[in-house]
Length: 112
Image (cartoon, rainbow, N blue to C red; front, top):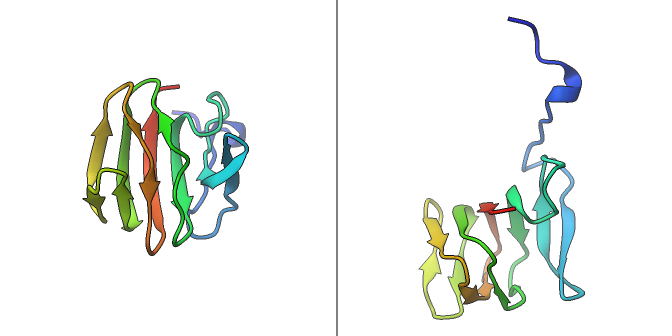
């Protein structure tokens, strides 16, 4: 087996990598760490980080969304609370916005 070529691998550490600001409707809506260059920013597989006391822009999903809470807290607009270790699935067409009291880091997969 041949070694993996440098151009065929990307590695980033969530504790030290630079995140990219993510904008929704012209408003900063968290930060994203995304290695795959084929999907639009905030689509496919990525790490999403929210600062303490922030709320995402209300939105409707076009495709299923799955996310896993690595660290912190997240509360959806209906009062459902998520914490570290929670794996969440939201159906295509779901409308929501999320708030964090203390900040959070989550792994997200959205259909590109």
